[in-house]
Image (cartoon, rainbow, N blue to C red; front, side):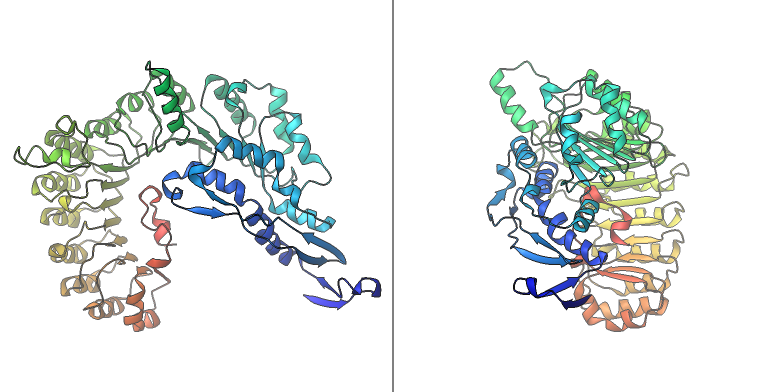
Length: 567
């Protein structure tokens, strides 16, 4: 960046002219325009898409003072109000907020005086908001003073009014032709036949649109009184359902049932979804429901993720038996249902159980589920979490589970267990020692207890297939057995040991890891780095290590990927 004196006529106001590179331009735009100006719109999207995460947060409208920048002898004055009103996600009216953003548009508060800046801003602002697909909502973007450009728009946020949903004509759909960089279409409404027809037309006409999101609400069908319906509608508005189309291999689709969404399992609704041939199914709805009709009628599913639901083991067995293409299963179970079968009748069932606990999962259902797992040859990823915090370990469940991993039909590549010490036993480690398919093993959140470190040592010394291992958040202590296993194993290249008590005795463990020196990616606690600096300095194999406290959302179940830990 260089500076030079300005002319006498302008020296009183701006004594220096600053020449900024386009790179610096973009940094400033990202800081003051892309991030700050879009925060209101992003707040709306986040409040509706992540209610469970954001309800406790308050966002303040950023105060951006008047600032002056000079580019190519032209002055840019940027001003975006000083309103410090605070928003609470619980208080945001989604429809009114969207309308306010569109009609009053924070962009009109910007005073931009530079053609070059307009071009830079247009490249940074890649999202366009509209209510309808017609000329009246396309015209503003064509203005000479618009900070939007059809050339750079990558995402269109489209929220048609429910009563105005219709089958759009081919001419209207062709309005999207001019958006040459369009990659994503987001629609917030409920799915019906008219919308389905429009989406199919868009889907067929624009193969370049790699992702299409449909944020919809499934209608709850009930014959109860109108007052109850209004109350349910208010809850429905807090939920979100997504269908995602992307052109990864064959334009995959994701169907998502989210928090507080009422879903009645109507065949009519399921048939609409079946026409879209979804591959991903993600359910976070807090309710008990039967998934069997959905699994039986939607045979295209490959990836299933279910949490916060009291799903039955029968339904889980059903999805594996009726859908021959299932590749991944991420589930959270309420196993205290099963506990009823082997506890005495006076045992107090935990409060997380529904009133109809006796009608829930039984031991025979667990046995059938394990048998189905053992004989399944398409499943590649299995992640199981436990939603019952007080559930105690019992060998009756682990005995059934360990038999899964000795069956030659089983093809699971990734096994992850969360808060499930009930499934850990000596026999499981013996089975995994003989298993050659599992390459990623995650035993987290109290799943691995101190008493089983000797068995883990045997697994590390004998298994040659595991490449990724995580024993995070178990609060276990360092031991000679663990050090011995890490010294002997030559195959693990990614390791997560955060969330454990490895200060006392941890030096021997890191000494063993340094002597072996095969780990390439490591996740640790910050005190492990402080007390064992020599390992991190001298290791030749270590490519990257991450301190767990710096990993935002690192243990989020529904976003669980290997890359989130080791990339």
